[in-house]
Length: 65
Image 1 (cartoon, one colour):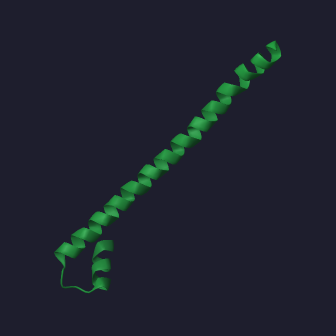
Image 2 (cartoon, helix red, strand yellow; image 1 turned 60 degrees about the vertical axis):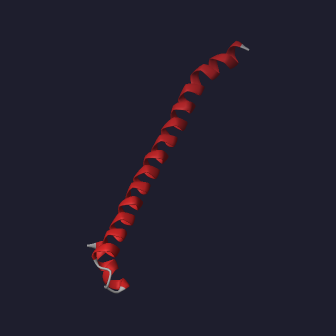
């Protein structure tokens, strides 16, 4: 039983740190994605308001610029 406790003490912290590291990286990626998505939405809304008479392709071109 003592050996099992020693093994848990050795491997459990390493396993938990690897798991926490992966989860934090995924959270950072998701935050970057949502930030880019919000910026893209703002650009599209701005172009729609700024150029209401332009066709869709022109609006897309302006949003990308």
